[in-house]
Image (cartoon, rainbow, N blue to C red):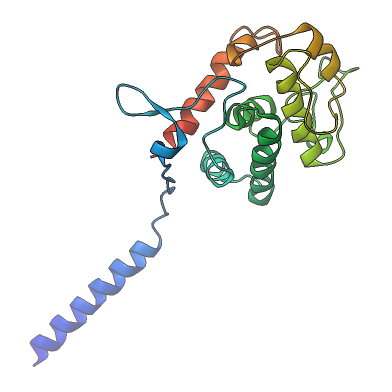
Length: 217
């Protein structure tokens, strides 16, 4: 009997240790599947999803997927803020026919994943470096997050469309008219050296798009 009692105690102790150990193991990031058949997404020869680089294509990722991906990249971010911004990017991009995946990736690049640190500061709600040139011209200010996102989308629409194509929402981008008359870009590669002086600007956005796509199954 003593032998069985000792054995039972050892087994019970092992189970408790195992359970406690499991509870301390961090959860892995959960990838969110996407319905490829209905989305019209493209896969490469290896079966990996490719997100479009074109400005006027419809974005593939949902607001939930955008925010989940961002949080997986920056676990210490303000999660409520990024969930709001993801929704705004979907809403505002859809309103103007802009690729929300591209816009969101560009936001990540321009703001350093919302850490900012250059001329633009968080309270400006400027998510794409609009008007940011030097210390005397740090960039445009917008009253709210959503208006800041709208200005970003409108600036992309100014590049992506010809002058006769009108906005569907009230104009909030103070630099819209100048761009809409003089600039044109079909995809992110048309933004290099134009939106930003960096000749590798498009490659940097595309690198983020590739990471975003890898988050999808």
